[in-house]
Amino acid sequence: MPIDPAEALAAAPRTGEISWTAGDVLLYHLGIGAGRPATDPAELRYTLESRLHVLPSFATVAGGGPPGVIDALSVPGVDVDLARVLHGGQSLTVHRPLPAEGTATTTGRITAVYDRGDAAVLVMRTEAADADGPLWTGEARVHVRGEGGWGGERGPSARREAPAGEPDRTVERAVREDQALLYRLTGDLNPLHADPGFAARAGFERPVLHGLCTYGMTLKAVVDTLLDGDVTRVRSYGTRFVSVVYPGETLRIRMWRGDGEVRAVVSAVDRQDTTVLAGTTVRHV
Image (tube, rainbow, N blue to C red):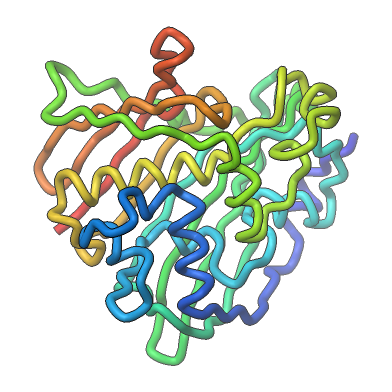
């Protein structure tokens, strides 16, 4: 079979060094829609190097290399068609605020391979540390369609009940037509996000937005709306990707306050409010 769970789990951890500059952070922030309006002081925190605050989700692209999804597909024991791959979920724990410029050592490995019947799920964990200690731990859940059914462990459910009651805040964020083309410059060059022919082969009507772009847009909305714009308050952030977003659509982000956390549900306004992110939780101080 194209996925050999035993070989993937036994593969040695991969260690490498990454570095980033303030320019990389600025590009990431622009890629998730920061800078509108361009002269708004709240936006200049993300777009002006002299007052730069680093949104924690920058960790998913720091170093400019391939994201966790692509890393997972290059592990021994994994040989699959990229057109059958979907990013199923992402979680991130930040151990301290991310610097605007830095160098870190990353260590990544497959920690689980689950059999969901119609798909295999790979769990790719990446840890990053610099000279001062741990920086972040990220975990990507990678769904490979058509690769399940070998009788393996199904794994725990990542689902969480939707928040009850009316949201405390609801905001809408427009996705630009060219947003995927800009975001891909942060390192994820998967043709699914730019090439109409490839997107059609994968079963989509046109190129789709990167899930991690929606992920970043949502965290920014939560920070700006309910955390006083203070990126250092974020401790962890996780979500499930349940449907794609198309460039040019509008996201509706509903937020519920909790004890030390904000829960959110994100939907595509243009497609009858179809949910695109679920089980979204931002834990904070």
